[in-house]
Length: 76
Image (cartoon, rainbow, N blue to C red):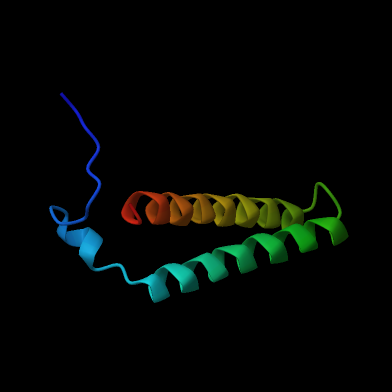
């Protein structure tokens, strides 16, 4: 039966993540998402630059989600 663990004692990769690394990664993810969202307002839909910016926004949002998930899971 599966059960959630509440500590990082049994996971060696968990012990390597410092709060500073999480904070920096979160700031980078927010920066990517905000810049991409700001650019989407100014770009014309249908252009290659618009498509690249949408892709950047999706990657930034995925990165942000992964960081939040890691902080939630590791922070327990």
